[in-house]
Image (cartoon, rainbow over the protein chains, first blue to last red):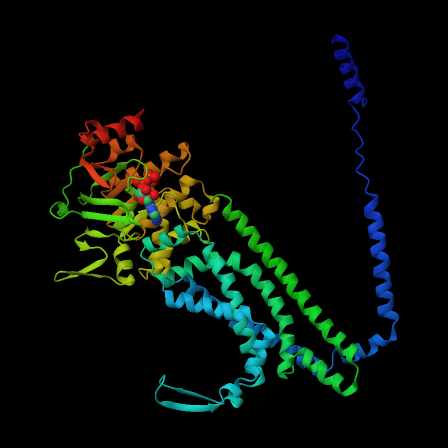
Length: 300
Length: 264
Ligand SMILES: Nc1ncnc2c1ncn2[C@@H]1O[C@H](COP(=O)(O)OP(=O)(O)OP(=O)(O)O)[C@@H](O)[C@H]1O
Ligand SMILES: [Mg+2]
């Protein structure tokens, strides 16, 4: 036993060979696998870039010839317009649906659930086709007393233009998704906040607007940014309604000059540029809300 | 230091609870509570955990509905309009109006997390009383001054200690000029060293003549400040009387057992 003990003691002194006045040099773990993987990926990436730049059939000259053309820019403007208007409808509709779902009224709550079920359960593409052909379903629309007198009637074809069909399709679908985001945001606000407001004599609507929603925002805003970026890309589906947004504008051009690939690239570049700008904005928004979140939750 | 209660309201109590019953999912929590609190009186509510103290307090400003009985605050029947032999439930707006003259202080403060201390105090005067902003600001500062926090007016709740948050919460309730203040264990979420500052503000409030109903486990505070005390046991107010008597010579065995346990 005493022998072992002395062994241990000498072992310990061997483990500590560095003089105490000199800082030890730390050798990081070596990771050869990383280098191999990185090299492989770089080679593949270089090959892709090479073929993209050298394959003449990409026709980069055509891509840039149309990049700033009037029709593409008009399409881009329409895409941005569709995105913003549909998103506004989606946010407003989502808020209404979320409040309906959270209300104590079983009719309102189950109506909202049914709406969400319907719009989330069917493809957006199909919904857009539906709105586009709504005039086949209801050739005439009228304003009047339900089941009673009609004051005015319109032809659905005149009223539901491709633009209207597009924002209805995109906006009403978005509302179903925004409803869930808003609902989780509203539910994230502690019950005590509402009780404190009620105890002070505040009404329901005041409490929702002044106390609950502002605090729900930190949960609502980040995913809403994602939805906005998603909406920009989803709006390309509106091409099926023959509304000249970015993609359909490109399609109209290549239908005539047969430069399909270059024009698809032109459109894609624009989508990339806008999504990048939106992502950067999203990044800063998220950081802002994370910060106030962390600061405020710390002592709760 | 028994304060004499020479308010005009000695005839009609500020708060009157008559035969209040309340069940949560068939489980009775309040089984016919009777309680009277005179104007200017400080009444401490004691009782074991789960005995129904919070429920009683929350019924008083209608944060909780009740099954039978009535609550009268400042001569006004809470939550209902009586017509003949019927009680018609009031609209939310009417209930909000009734609540606006009852201040409530919660165990967990419940300050509005997205507003500064001053904004917290200004919110209800502006939104409920429709006070002009400038006036509400002035009033808010005066209230923060009253709880000793004028210098933290622009701090967010997360930047304040628990004791400071609770004092802001008291200022927020006071800004509505309430006739009655309800406190639900205002110090039990606080670190021991922060309890004193909140009790100090409450002591001052009592000295100013505020009608207060205070659920608390701070027996020393109750002995010093309370005029009356009520002991709630299993949903009944089993003992109710002058604080000195209830806290020192309780008649009911469960009150005695409770006090022995708390004071040990
Ligand atoms: N929202 C609710 N739903 C169901 N049961 C409840 C609810 N609120 C309270 N209770 C029950 O009612 C009883 C009384 O609760 P209450 O909060 O009034 O007690 P308390 O005297 O305030 O207790 P404590 O000292 O722990 O705060 C408890 O048994 C509790 O579980
Ligand atoms: Mg309680």
